[in-house]
Image (cartoon, rainbow, N blue to C red; front, top):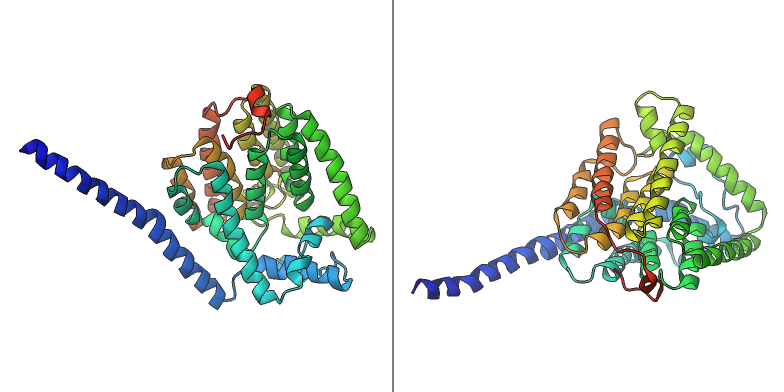
Length: 373
């Protein structure tokens, strides 16, 4: 009789567990996302970067405006376009649509990019979609309408097609040409002995940027470099970058830059060492860390880049996936010292945990068209 009762209660427990999982990882993230979408739309906080920077850049290309003519007041307020010419050209189609409708379209594209990246990297655990939808870095990514979540998808594609030198090389060239701070992907190619892919990346990068700056005008190159310099002077204290954290603790900008370079060299060395040992996924995790360390400006949404190595090395829901939820106390960009410290603590926890895992080892089979893992 006892055995019969236990057998009958087992399906009930299983059904309750499934109901709880659907409530936590499907219903809750869905409701939160819908509420946030409604909130940012009614408060005009949605796609702020897209509207002020990217849509405006596409509009300037169409109408022959100067891509990099931004006042110091605009830069301080967050309105500028410190990206290469290719990025501006990619936003020309969006600028053909009214900014309101275009903002909605780009926000949807950002959200879909995250789902697409997970589909490529960790398709076997549906709960990951729910927990990632609650990550504050992911929410900040689509709320601001930045490039970060599209880069997440791009890096996921690179991992998926890492065994195809031409595809991998062109992907790296495109990603770096859109946002140069992802240059550690090139280091990852070299570290994992993907020399053909690295060669294709150089050739494709030169071709892409020559064509892009030819379209917008070569005078834009000087304007871009000048804008980057001015923005660095005005915003180096803002956000979570190493230089900003150094300024928070009383160091000068020069000392912070030296610290950033020193840490960056250590992280780059770790990436190369992991790659040479055949730990290609670990090397990719360290390469993403280098993106955060080397960037002169780091906002909260940059953290979403760590989604890629986490999904590769932890493709099932584990406690580590919940750690980024701690960043809900951190603002998008104007962080205090303790908030910046928490940001880097969470980054360190994730990267340290991932670095302990052996991960997919580089071997001849991985040079064929590769599976996500």
